[in-house]
Image 1 (cartoon, helix red, strand yellow):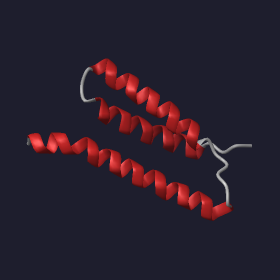
Image 2 (tube, rainbow, N blue to C red):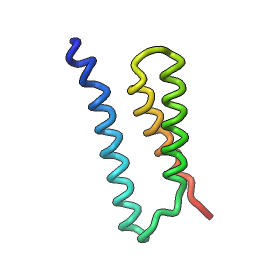
Image 3 (cartoon, rainbow, N blue to C red):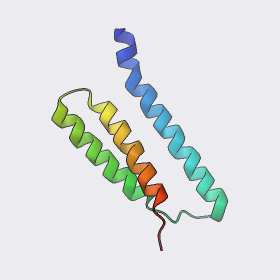
Length: 81
């Protein structure tokens, strides 16, 4: 069980990275450039995840990964004008 607790943050981060890479590839194939707030969403999600993880005094890597993924999903869905 201890091995699973150590390995889980790495698995969550890897899945988040794969999702980010697949969406970036899809956006580049669609129109050649990215016209959304993906970078801003990633940055804000990363900062919020780190802040929330630090305030709960638990394993901060869970919150960083989940915050980055949520920020990414919000940023991708907001289109630039």
